[in-house]
Image (cartoon, rainbow, N blue to C red; front, top):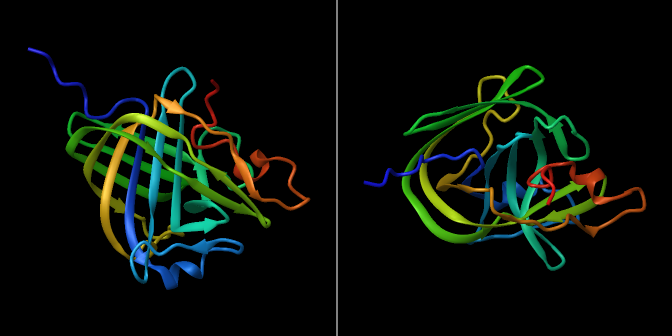
Length: 221
């Protein structure tokens, strides 16, 4: 009898999506971005967390407050991205990550400057749906707008999730909306795309200065 593989590998991305009021989201989305309504009066917000394993492991965490547009690019607007890679700059800040994994559940605690920031619990429901998926991100820093979309040839899974923002966390009270989809997938098979400017000011040297070394850019081809 073939044993079923573990629910969670060493390379994983978790994405939890909320339907949030577009009017409230617009207050936190800077120009020149425009909030995209996926349903009348609603946009997509949420959180993601990623763990890259191997010889040089790294973790990431981010909050996306809205699905946004600039020019011909749509993506999830992320105001801050957190990483333990030690290369924080641009939109990326340093954080510490504690992952706990067993056969039935994964949990993650994120701390920033030594204080609890966010906690996520994940329990698989429907596993290993073959998909080609992508997760487009837009980051804005000092008027510069950078877009990145890696693509994953993978098997996505649907999950039940718990999201907690500890008392005192800057995120406490955020994501006031309807959670409608929680998913995770393997990130070891990535078709990488270069970060690209979609709006650039003269103060920007390159896209990495805006975006930071995050979301699949840590590992080289």
